[in-house]
Amino acid sequence: MQFFKLLGLGFKNYFKGINFLITHKLYWFVIFPIIIFIGLYNLGHYFEALEWTISYDLKHNIGEIETVNGLIWMTLKIIFYDQLYYMFTKFTMYFVIICLAPVLAIVSEKIEEKLTGNKYKWNFFQLVKDIFRAMKLNLRLILIEYAIVLIFILIGTLIGGVTKYVLVSVIPILIGFYFYGFGYIDYINERRRLDIPQSIHFVSKHRGLAIAIGSIFSICFLSFNYVFIKFDTIAIDTNSQILWGSLLVVTFILASVAPLLAVTSATLSMHELVDLSKNQYALKKEEDEETKKDGESIE
Image (cartoon, rainbow, N blue to C red; front, side, top):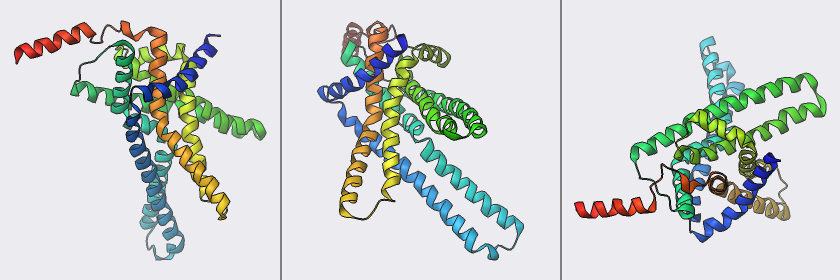
């Protein structure tokens, strides 16, 4: 029952988050996900183009390769660029969370401030620390997630049929829901001064919330990725172009807004769960006013 209650909490605050961002004029932060999202996808497809070019050269100009070392070198280049393409497309959601760490941390702080009046002193070294924490945590989540996924894939190859499809295609997506949601909840846990093991323990006890946050975020990205790939294969008639072109624009907007909504839902939900106004590490309103007075007196 607790699981479904937390699941509903996360979904509810996604919709509540839309109104919250508009009301408090925080929607302009969507500029950053758009820039990073476009950059990562273009970089991934740049590596894909390089890999295709090298593969083409190897196929059509193999007779011109004079030594075994030359053939090995060309093959290694294909594998290298193929893996870079795979990394920048398959892991895009993790890279978005990592690259947006400073922005999403600021957005989460501003949401908490609107909710509770809490403020946090800006510190460059703390910002760097937050970025490295996000990188460390998400790289750790990538390794854990794909270790689990690999097990299901191995089992699926032995079974076959519909069960194989579920194990290889469906379950990995569901597992991803939890890990992506984890990354967003950790922004708040970091301000609560929970270390990574403590954050892992907290999220494991509130996995329903993590899955809710990660699911909407993932579905938005996966929808755009599907339409993006499908768009190159559709018929060239006008109606199909208009339909799929519209879907491409809509899913791109959803994918761009998704990180902002995810961190908003995570912050709103965590406030309901743990009452962020009681965070002893936050700078309270009275303390903030005293700090300003002290600064004015020094001047």
